[in-house]
Length: 114
Image (cartoon, rainbow, N blue to C red):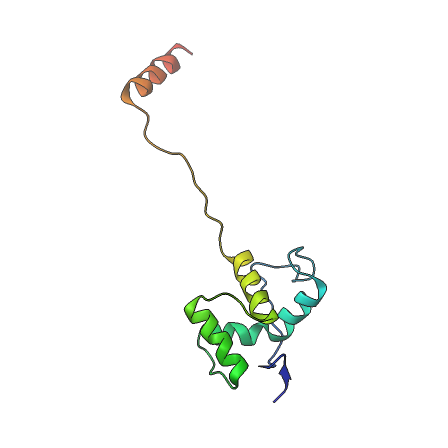
């Protein structure tokens, strides 16, 4: 069992949906952060979504952080927070609504003149 920063190392992690050019070229992560995400991101994803059981104290602390939404205490936890904030959709606010009838009628009348 290979460990990297206390996490069990699995196969490389790629997020082609959010980062089709890779973590390195996204502009969101440093070279070291991109390498760490590639190396242990899959394990972090599995732990967060409870697809794997924690194998040690470090992984258990990470899982606790994900479940309780507490602030990150380690470099890896901070990196995962950063990844999550970049990949979660931005909230978009729009102003929409129905036109008042008198405006809609006036527009219809104008269209008839052209």
